[in-house]
Image 1 (cartoon, rainbow, N blue to C red):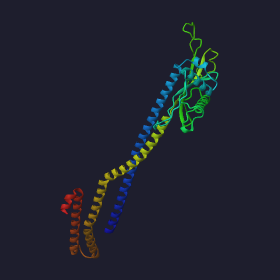
Image 2: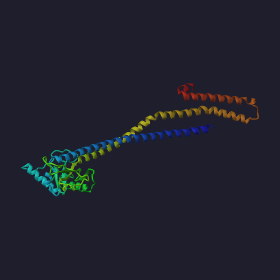
Image 3: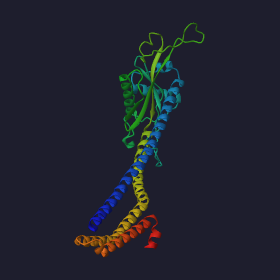
Image 4: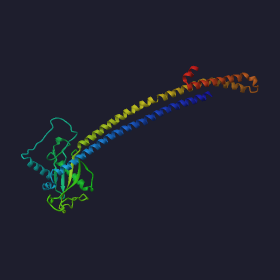
Length: 361
């Protein structure tokens, strides 16, 4: 009987220890996943907020270019100097700037002190494309290198060929787009530009002293065809803003936040493990006290139970005798039962109040 009790005690200890280890692992994994998910979400939210801020700033810059395009001069003046393609329009722009500047001389610059602007920062510009296909710059592009650029500048070559490629891509994409397309994001020569379009229409016959209807009406289909027959001058204005610095900034920020996320998750996992270990100390101590109680109960109850079993065997062996003749065995059994009851009460006292139980023991 004592052997059966010991085997049950051993199995219980093993199961209890395994349950505690499983509980520790489960709490550690779940808490680590929770805090790491919160960290990743917070870092991702910070990046998204930065991306939205950069987008809004670029949209404001595009709107400023659009406004500046119509404030710099009328479409009629631009139409008079319009050219059939971008290179000729840019060449005409240079010639007109020479005439306005008077004694104009070519100038070039090169950095003399190292500093980083996180990529090239080129000036925004706008291009008006009229109904017949001719075009003219409303807001001129600046810092454009002549020809195909200088390899000394690396991948960021803001040159005439890059200007031509950028505008041709924008015109082609817009021609293949729908009625009201989204802004374009175009990559050329290591730069990223954002382009938006707007239709501008003016009435050449307008006069402050004119009578009758001399206003302007717009078609809802977004097409330029048809304005000329109505006596209007129409153009689709393309506004370009260089967002290379924003793209580089967001890319670097993403890499930095990813590194912070990896390091932060590793630290949080270790912190969670330490916190879980400290939180489970009382549980481990409770299990240790339970094991100690079971061991003590086994030793306390084993002796009277063994004596009771021996007296019972003696009674069975002398079953032919009367009860009165076996008084000594029944008396021993009574004493064993009383001792078993007394030890059981002391064990119960030990469970209820370990200090009082130890003093009685």
